[in-house]
Image 1 (cartoon, rainbow, N blue to C red):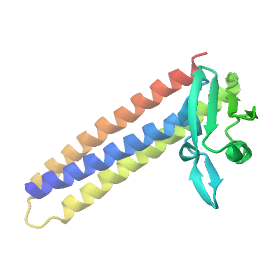
Image 2 (cartoon, rainbow, N blue to C red):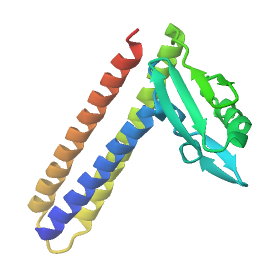
Image 3 (tube, rainbow, N blue to C red):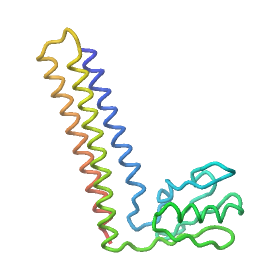
Length: 184
């Protein structure tokens, strides 16, 4: 029984990690408002190595439609601009000599639909990860020695219950993000 609980808890932890990863990825999908997380995946060359932008500059949101990137070294401004452009985020950085200012354009209907598709794709990836965790747990349950088929069947039902809860949570997160993106 202890082994069964351990396997189910491992599967639940793995599924929770998939949901946390989904939430982190959805932060990168902008909904038309400025958010420092919009620049989270941007890497800039800093003294010969690729470094996350947040480690070489301070990123702030002076208002709902503007991001400001204040580098710790003024010499980094051209590198930061290049990195933001190369990240292919659809953002156009402007340099005022002191910092980089990025105006977040309002989203078009077409762009909103693209973002919703991307969010749904991330949701599908999370569901696949959850189902893989379920499969791994069920395989481990079947490999246990000296346990009756009834106990294995009950444990598989518990794993399926945890899976269903997590898949429903993914659907809830995605529908919330879709509503957020489509809101003008």
